[in-house]
Length: 307
Image 1 (cartoon, rainbow, N blue to C red):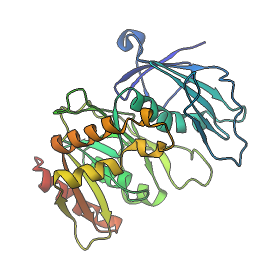
Image 2: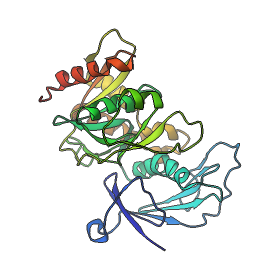
Image 3: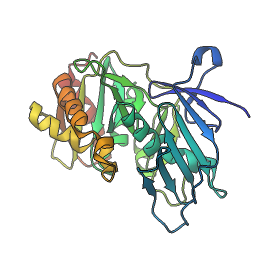
């Protein structure tokens, strides 16, 4: 069996399943894997097409996650994710949960802090966008990429919190999800529109020509509020910042997990440390995509980014 070696989320990954979304590296560069992805029978029935996804946090062999049409996954700490693709699964279907919820929960169990966010490096500053579904995180990020920025992530923003005073960001992979309207309004040079993962899905992945290097520090996080009269930044105090970080943390999606797995105390400490280390603000931007350049200028002024 061919082994594929990648780097993403601060991990050296060795996978029996090809993941073209990730940056492939040679064996010498990869070194010993931090995470191995193994294709095997996990001993679970895949849910029928009309069933919801299923999470089993009580399996003594490791957390099990199952998706209809896609397959099943088992997380075996400290360094293995087992996967069982459904017989009808397209390869791109499997990557959708694997590089999202499965890896997010694995990283949470490994002590990382994960936000649901888009992030980039632009004019010497590293920053990200938080927001509710359809708030425009990816579209806003695209406006900065069009202006010379480089993507850090478009879904899982992973922080290594070993030094709480200086959180370290781990870049993900060079793809951006955009609706057809956003892709037309905010074209990113060199982006390749990929086929829809699922027919009828409102966004498609766009493969970019590269990813940002690991940022040296992280400057700010912005909660997006669309529909304002003008673009402006409203900086939050640490208490309000902490509330927003908790709200947009990825692990809130797993609220049925046992308390010892959620580790709310650690999560609160991470949110508090990040609120102290990184400025958090609300970015008010007009709803019209034609006015996104105003958001770019406003963020540049707020961060003192060099022209």
